Image (cartoon, rainbow, N blue to C red; front, top):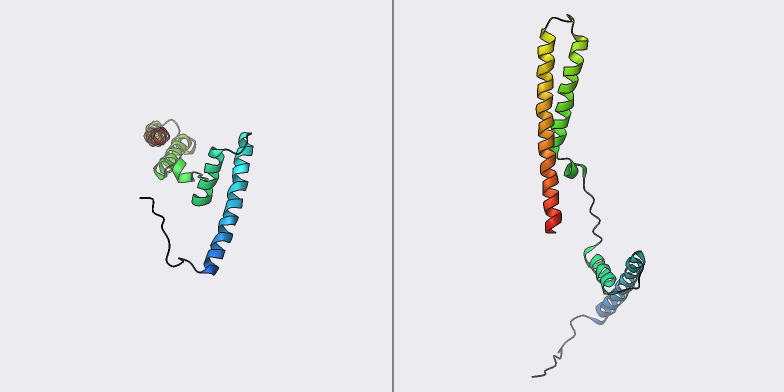
Length: 142
């Protein structure tokens, strides 16, 4: 059952075969150079691991993932941080702008502003911890 497959007709024309051979040779040189770079970073000779990484990069492109701002800080966290700072500023600046100091109303308003700022601070902690937990789970799984 040792059969050899013989093609009746060529799949590509001669010019396409030549172009493919030239491109494959260029790709081979590119993979060889990159494998040497990877091996040089590790301080050793070119091995199967460095060759495999070079092939993966050549086939899939270099995977230089850099997290964007909203991947590190979700929009909800940013909004909560802005509102927390705004209400804290209102709470801390209101006594300075109070026309009648010592009246008693300002301390209640200050406490209210600071309570709202604390609520938003809690939302920041909650949303940030969810991002940290999901990042830890993704690192463990893959």
